[in-house]
Length: 348
Image (cartoon, rainbow, N blue to C red; front, top):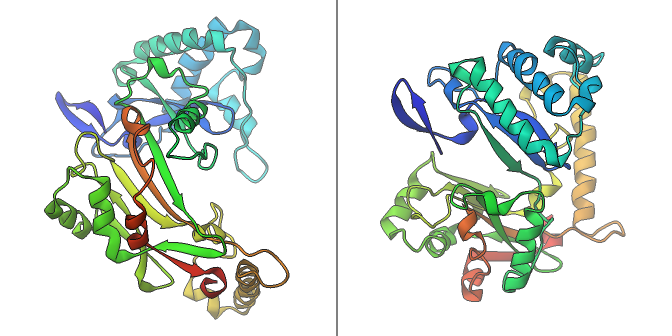
């Protein structure tokens, strides 16, 4: 949440709802965004900036800043936003972006100058600030949670490109995860254990608060597996019941979904009923079903290939200040009550 001044009153707005734009990135997974809280409107709660505002930012702030602070790169910056947009469009209308490297020792000057130019642009662009988004790091910092040294090394790896000493550890949040697996099996969560698991993760929350959370459809979402009632994970927004040092978000799921999950529509995409009404799309569905069947067949370990396991994964979002000492392990007896392991051949 981030406070926002709106017509003289301070309101709290989820940070991802504040108008923002990606400004740059470090390697592949660290995105630097710039946020404009004064552009937020309850009547138009959209986080994306309009084309005219993007043009103003580029033409009057971003390009002039780069020409001033990094003059060696003046040959890399298109003359206007319109020119940059036209240059980035492909024949199909999609956008393909290029990038320009900025020396690390110029970054502070770039940031200071850019924010100053934005403030001069008008009241709507004042109080802009930078946000850092580190995504897709799951699996990059695998470690033994019971070993404090390994936890510290994993944290150092995660923030390799960030000056941690300059951060407010209460304002930064980190997802901490624990994975439970059994070789040759798919391990998933039991619905009957959700209350006990949440109680362990949020000791400050009373049983009544947890019951209200589970009944709240806006803050708690059940994710069933195989359409079996007892096999289910969940997603929960826990800000209002976890306490100051507790997690703000909890997710329990089974990694077997990796088999079917894709950011782009593929063979496992959701189908429309109308696709069955046309012979061409009907034939395509039948072919896709053959592909899906073969994938599940191989996941089961058939066809001369090593099968594919699934793990029960638990993720919590906590402040950076509490990340080192959160979810380092779970009691073994609690794990036995919370998960069930199914032979992968039976599951798939």
